[in-house]
Image (cartoon, rainbow, N blue to C red; front, side):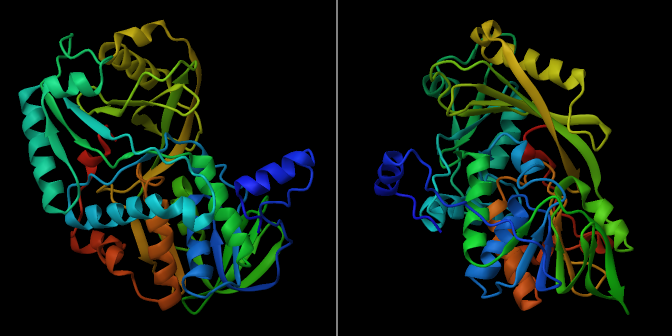
Length: 414
C-alpha cells in the first residue's frame, strides 16, 4: 500500500505522477472465501477492513454489482454527528464519531473531517421545548450538546435570518459534529481493506444464495457461484431485495432521499444548519458549494433521482433561512436510495438464515455510521455474537415491540 505523505507527493510529482500504484486491486473472484460481503459501499468496505485488521479474518470478498461507492455512499450530504436521543443510538453513533476523529491516521488518508459544529434551529416555542428535552437526553447519554440563544446563533452564523418570516427563537449545537468527504471515506476503507488481502470485486451482481438446511453455503453471482461460510448483506436501499432472494422479509421501505448544491462561493457558512420545522439542512462543502438536503421523497421508489416537490420545498426553506442565497444558481441535484425501518433505527446482526448477517435499514444515518457499522458488524461476524453496541438493533425487536424510535433525530421528515 502506498504510504501517503508529503515526501511521496513530492517524489511522484517529479515523475509526473505516473508511478503511483493502484489504490486497490481488482481481482477475479475466487471459488471460496471465509466471508462474502454484498455491497462495496462504506458499510461493506468498513466491515471488510475491520474483519481483516482487527479480527484476523482476511479471506474476505466484497462483491459489488456496480462500482465501488456508487450507491448511497457516493450520494449523500457527508454529515457526521452523534446527537441522538436514545442511549443505544447515542452510544453507537458517538462510537462512530470518535472513529471518524481517528480515521485519517488509522487509514493514512485525508478524509477532510471538518468538525465545524451542527446547529439545530427552533422557530417556535413548542420546538424550542422539544430541542431542550433532546439536548438534556443527549447530555445524559454522555454526548456533547448545548442550548444556544438567538443572540448566540446570530454570532455563530451571521448570514442566518433570525428575525425573518420564521424567526429563530433558539436552538442547540453539537460542536464536535460536522462533515467529512464521502468519497475519501470510501476510498480510504477500500485501499486499506485491499492492502489487508480483501478481494474487492466490482461489476458483479449477486443473483441468489446457496442455502442448505437453513444455513447459507455461498452466493450465486453473474460470474458464477462462490462458496462462503458466512455472508453479510450491506446493500443500503436494496436490503429487502437481497432478503427476498434469501427467502425472508425485512420491515423496510425504500425511498429516494435527494440533495442539491449551488454554484461555489467563498466560505460564508460556518456551521451545518438544520431546521426540523422547515424540513431542511444545509452546509458548505470544501469546494464552496452550498449543499442542501431535506426530507425523503413522498413515494416509495428505487430511483436515484428526486421529485420536484421536495426540491421546491428545500429551496424555499433555504431562501427563508439565508435570504442572500436566493442569488445563487442551483448547479445539480441527485438522490440516493435509502431503506427506512419502522423506528428509523438500523437493523444489524443475525437473519433467519444461519450464517447470513445483515446491516441495513439505515434511513438517513448510514454515512455517519460507517466506521461504527463496520467495526460492530465485523465483531458480530467474527465472533458469531452481536457486538454489545448493536445487541438491541436486531430483527427480533420488531417481534417483541422493543423499538428504538429515532425518527426525530434525523432532523427532517421521513
